[in-house]
Image (cartoon, rainbow over all chains, first blue to last red; front, top):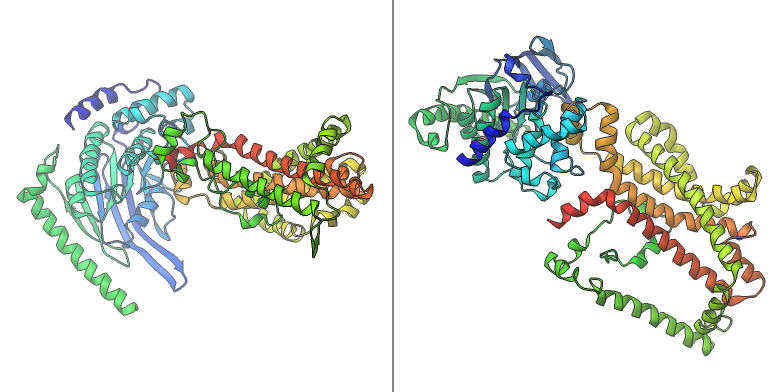
Amino acid sequence: MMTISRLNRAAVIDHPRSFRPRSASGKGRISARDIDLVFATANGPHRAVEAASLEIQPGEFVSLLGPSGCGKSTLMNCVAGFVKPTRGEVLLDGQAVVKPGPDRGMVFQQHSLFPWKTVKQNVAFGPLMAGVGAREADSVARTFLSLVGLSRYASAYPTTLSGGMQQRVGIARALANYPSVLLMDEPFGALDAQTRSMMQENLLEIWSEFKNTVLFVTHDIDEAVFLSDRIVVMSASPGRIIADIPVRLARPRTQELLTTPEFMAIKRECLALIREQTLHAFEQQNQAG
Amino acid sequence: MSLNPRPRPPLSEAALSSPLETSERQPIEATPAAATPSGVALGASRRLLPENWDRYLVRIGALLVAALCWHLASTYGFDFFVRFDNVPGPLVVGAEFLAQASSQQFYLHILHSIQRIAIAYGLAVVIGVVLGVMMGRSRFAEDVILPYIEILRPIPAVAWIPLAILMMPTEQSSIVFITFLGALFPIVINTVHGVEQTPKVLVRAARSLGASNAAILWHVVLPGALPSIVTGLAIGMGVAWFSLLAGEIISGQYGIGYFTWSAYTLVEYPKIIIGMLVIGGLGSLCTLLVRKACAPLLRWQTEGAKS
């Protein structure tokens, strides 16, 4: 782990010249104001998100935590610009979000790499779309592949890689645009436990280089506490924000943190909230059924 | 490596030439690795014989058995509901084939057919893919175009002959028109199907990476639809031959279809069978060529399946 990390550092310093980081300049302030999101379903309107307000500072790592189906992904999709809120608005650095854009890098749960492009072509896609030219995009892709330790697989097709490697490519691809915000929708949810904890440490190392804003959706409490500066807990249907828990644990963080009393205290707090919400959701489902 | 047997034998391409193109919607792009354990495939690729040579042996054997039955049936005048007493045996047909193969006229027939296929198929590929992508991407385009496709598609090639002769300026163009129609529909339908299957998450990923609509079409939608489009192209090639023959039988002076039909009217029975076999051979050869030509574009699929 440590050797990889040192290698990474060398790689990151060597940013391609004409394609500079945008994130360093205190950008990436997200403010979601009074978001309501109502979907039309066969059983009538479904209120996925209700009166959600959220302020995220530039460079902050915030997790959205909640039971599955609580609308946390939906709220993130509003920030990403994939979904238009029924009421309220999302601002990024004061600008209203109306559509997806390269300033908000997106990492999905799985199967989001272009299977017909090689690993390097996947990572080069964003820079290419930004119009930097093929050679420049290629060198950006190399930089970011070495950042995630996958230079060897540059010309492999994504489907030949393991799930964890695919997600690392996904992270490299999202970062290759130097986004001020990184949106991660349960990016490690489909991985096995060992790979997941490796990926979490890896992500924190990479993030410490970029210090961009991260909004991270998860239902895994350990993951949320381990990664975040703040945990925003959501309730199940309708999805409301019910708690905003600061995580004042020192960085850099390693897996040893998981057994410390400080970690446990925050985990216990989250656990109680989530349990309550999950029970509430069960009751609702039982009533509906 | 170029003669990889698929789980389906190459002979089944003939079945694809039927106008029931929608029956094969999923691309059957199984790879040798999917058919055999990868260890076996690796070892075999270094040998001189193509891998699975024993399976080829069985296929050739199956054909030989059919030829033997045919020989016996025509020699002894098999006559039970199906009559073989007027059917020339394989030896007679073989001798006639050698005679034909040394005449220039025979190649002229084949050349004319191939030329018509080339023009009609080329047009069908361009127009079919463009229409298919439009229909797959735009609901309005689909609503405008789909009724035509649905009504015209079940009309067999033979039924187009009178109208084609009335409408088209030359005999050549009416045959090409009929052939074009045959190839068009499977290509359109498979393209639409492929385009509509585009995974939403990939479109979202592309959008969040700053891709324009045109870039999404080129980098996401088209490559994603390609396996299905290639299936459409292969089926379209089969149907093109199917339709070409209908056109050539009724009208024309050259062409392998005309060759076959005139052999019947002139009571040259061995030539009928030669014509039929040439059509079958050329049809499946062209379909194979289409698949081989498209294979490099689908390398990502086969590479992925190997792991």
